[in-house]
Every structure is written in C-alpha cells, then in structure tokens.
Image 1 (cartoon, rainbow, N blue to C red):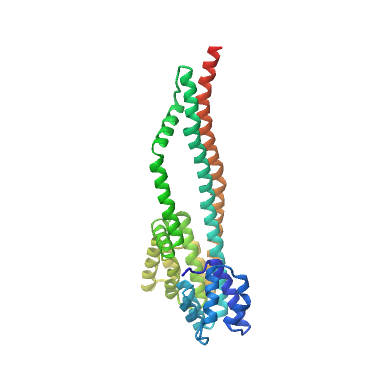
Image 2: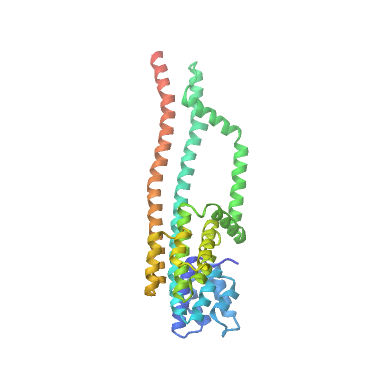
Length: 346
C-alpha cells in the first residue's frame, strides 16, 4: 500500500490536531475534510478510519494499523501521547513534513531541469552528426573532395551511432522500463532509494539532506521529552537509508554511552559543526535544545536550497555554451573549406 506523501502527512497532522482540540472523533472529522483529498493514499486513510471499530484505541496504534504512515511518524505520535504533548508533537510533525515536501520539490527540480536540458542538447547534436553532416559529406564528394578535421570525427561518430542504433535504443528501452517499474512498485522504489543513499547519501547535497532530516527529527524527539540517546535512536529511523549518516550516528551513540556530553559527541561524529554543537550545549542549559535543533535544520535547508539554485543558474548556461561550441565548430569546419572550394571554382 502506498504511503502518504510528506505533503499529505503535513496536512494530516494539522487536521488531526484541529480535530483533537475540538473534541471531534477522527473518523467524523475526516469525513468532513475528505473532499479535499484526491489521491489513493488519502482516500485509503479515510476509508480505514471510517471502518475502524476500535475507536478508543490510542491514535498511534490506529495509525500503525493503517499501514499508511512511516515508522518515524507513528513512533513520534506515540511519544507525544506518552509525554502528554500530542498537540505540540503534531504541530512539529506538520512543520517537519512540510519542510520535507519543499526539500523534495527542490531536489526534484534540481534533477529534472538539467535532465530535460541534457536530452534536448543531446538530440540537437545527434541530429547534427547523423542527418546534417552526411548531407555535407555527399556535397563534398560531388565536388571531388572530402571533409577534414573536426567534422570528420563527428561524421564517424554519427556513422557509429547509426550502426549501433538498434543496440542503443534497446538498452534505453530496457532502462526506461526498469525505471518505470522501480517508480511504480513501492518496495523496488524504496530499495533503489536506500541503495542510492547508502552509496552517495553521505556526501555533498545528499549529505546535507541527511543532516537536515536528522536535526529536524531530533528536535521533535527532544521537545517531546526524550533523553539525547533515545532521541538519537528515534531520529536514526529517518536516516536509515544513508549508510554514511548511520555510521556517524553509531559513532555518536558510542560516545554518549561512554558518558560524554551530547554536543561533544555530535562534533566528534562529524554530524554537526563545532559552532552548531556549542549552540546545542547552550540551548540544553536553557532547556531549549529542541528549538535550536529545529533552527539548525532550517538553516541547513536554506543553505541547501541556495546551493541548488546556484548550481541550476550555472548549469543551464554552461550546457547551452557547450552545445553552441560543438555546433559552431562543426559548421565552421564544414563551411569554411566549402567556401574556399566554391571560390576557386568561381
């Protein structure tokens, strides 16, 4: 069964929080709100709560039984129930998943735009080397000469593409089918995502994404009354796909178990910077560690968004310049010799 998206989870938290504050039964409240939900997961959630017979069960148990919520979500709601801070926990979860949704949109844009641009540029170059250059080659042959230099290299590349087009198209078709299957099958999608995160999740942009998730998750856990070690355990479920981050968390946990302070452990495990760890230390003394962790998560996310925007601003022009150089050099290497030949014939 498809899980709820971060956007749906954020909206659901706000809705449930309002229903609980108004002393309205969840199934009745969702019946009033269901008109705004159009995806299958949201409708399945509504159907589950409407058909739920054990209305006296804790909210966390009912969420777990639905099978639509991630483990971190249900564990955090259960923690909020036990600590008597369910209202605050739902609000924090709503903010957390709203940021997750925005972050996912930013990452999706950062991948989609360059990919579309790359496909368009590749199509231009392929048409040039497979369709345009052979025409010029025939013209040169009729004039009793042949192309030289850079144009010949591209012409040979075009001939190779035409000769192997069946193999290339078959490979692309298989890749496309596998990609669609992975996207449509939730277990395969989760496995692929975990494998990718395990290999690349600890570096660069993805590393900062893991740090943002960890800081947000820990802020909610600590605000709900958990001690640092248990908060770290709960937050680890959010980053379970990133092998590098999991190793850092394991190292941090080992330092905590040895009796070291949380802020020192976070620095030694290379999870947060020295400055961020000092802020956490001061916040713990003032009883506001959760708020500072949330601020660190927000700051990291803002830096990540700015970095993605900067890369997108530079990538587009760079790709355009590259394809213009290729096309320009090709046309120059073809047209300049032809102009010389035509001049000599005149």
